[in-house]
Image 1 (cartoon, rainbow, N blue to C red):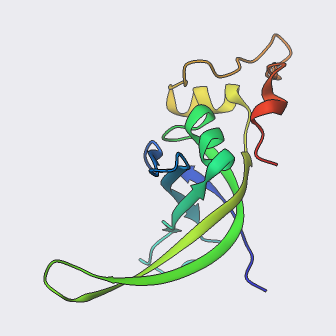
Image 2 (cartoon, helix red, strand yellow):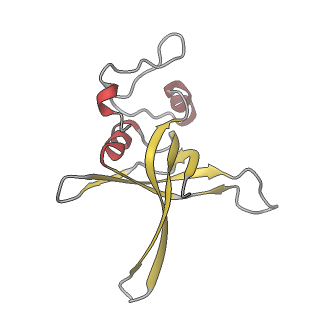
Length: 139
């Protein structure tokens, strides 16, 4: 079974594009901490992710660089010829479901940024969920 679950922080703002048919595509990468590391070895991995349709629109509206995200999806490999004629092999995580991995208050405190239109935390530390969020959920 081809299934992957990742939790990490976006390394940059998601890049959103649209096909000629109007389908939205979000490309982003996340920093995922490794549980075990070798001495002087990398402490994180940086998988490239891609999402389509409603999931991509949800990412565009609610996520930005530094935010912690949960991604559930599948691994997809591919290849293409670059300008020099060499074959380049790719591996992407196709995000089928995404979710918030921390509260807005935690995110704002950790990176000092906020996305316009995002819900703000209330006095009790929990964020207020907009009434129309159900219309935008990709699942």
